[in-house]
Length: 422
Image 1 (cartoon, helix red, strand yellow):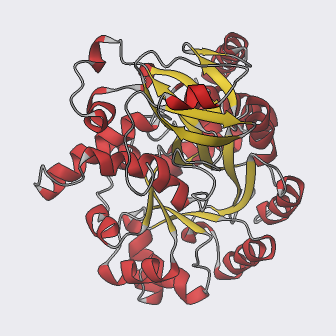
Image 2: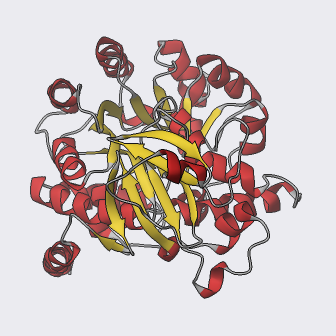
């Protein structure tokens, strides 16, 4: 996924420490001596995938309240208020990270509560992460006061600011859950520490109506009027945006997390992705929370993005598989402003790599590698995962993590939740 979209048959990648040192053919085996050689056995080596938007710990609530109307306000928020604490976030994050690693996600962007617990889990398990502490205008699981997430976020940012795997961030939940003063305060923190600001934007139809009625603006125009949009800003969803909104977003160089699976499941709408890509905006793919989209892998999202947008635009030639894979890798890295570090297999970049095995029945025959990955592959085809030069998954098994223990702990918690909500 370099600029030339180079494809190397019988390729060799040399890793030194946490970075890629060389990329080429079998001749590199003669030039370099290595402590370990991984034989891909005819598999596909590709950059690790980037999940640009999720709420990882919500995996503990997966399959609860699906198909209900007004799910956020009637179900999710009350459930979080009642049940979310540090232990739940710690356990949920570990389970979710395991799911992401097993499906080839090597970097994820998260916004939730108790983000310090998410950071600890990510660090322990070796995954790369951009983690935003949520800010809302009501008491939340990790704050007894409205907007307490601001103080938490500053401490969190200061603690993790220099980490090699963790990028701390500030995450006002949405325009409609933050007033203008606190949005500006969040933006000031983002600027002070030069960290991302993550937010749901233009996701709800009633959100659009609110800003039209109160300000005669769109949500994007409202945020721009506050001066909070810039190249550090990562916007999730952007379903209801106009051409004028896209002009603003393009000018401000914001990152875009496109969550087609969760959007489709919620029946919300289809963003103007064709226009975003035409403008070469920074678009990556996200799963949204596992209570919204139910999965955390990006392979699933790739197929959905291609098919839904082809259908929506009535054009089967739109978004060829190569472009979809770009969004899942280097595109996601651009959206998170990490493209100088990750997203492609090039010398000096971090060694965040995935091998898809091609021996499973769904992976043959292969005439087009990109089409095979986007339309035929699934998460179970991920064989090997390397993050920051460390092998975290080998032969589809975790190398540094006891998943069975985490799974057992999640099963105990789910039984408790069933009892509490019954």
